[in-house]
View: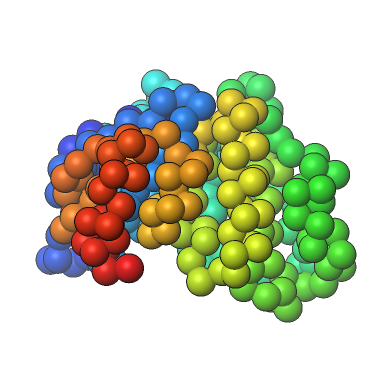
Length: 235
């Protein structure tokens, strides 16, 4: 589904990514783990086309994305769930969920969630459907950001730290939604500091350090080295 090859990125003269290579197969949930400043968010932004100073190859289901702007990548099936949640004061919860365009089979879109499915998974969004997005709590905004991407029918979700700073009950809801995406055959690339959470939903994990992919781990490796990885991540 996704192939990244020799991807490098800069902020001015400072290099953030160095020849990153990874792949995500259709139907997989793959996480990127690493310390703060390792380049995880920059990697997702490069895949989405939101970072200008980059070089390398990004391919989605055989289509080269390197020269395409972010909105064209979204139309081809990338769903963006940013760490800042991207909520708008001028839109209610329900408007966040109904106004964005939905992808069709012509671009190979995934299974778009219905409003009923969103509200069943995140009941608090139904209860607050007429509330402005910025009046939600942080956890509610995170659920809304994920639900908005699920409504689009994106075939590959890019999720940046979806559980950071959230209460356990919200983390459980996020995990249930991502597990359902996987059950339906969807694909997810996930930046996640919570190693225990990652091991419950993901198939494989890439460890990023100083802008490099230094290891690829399966869940057995992740669980057996959990203490070592938590120490490395500073958690």
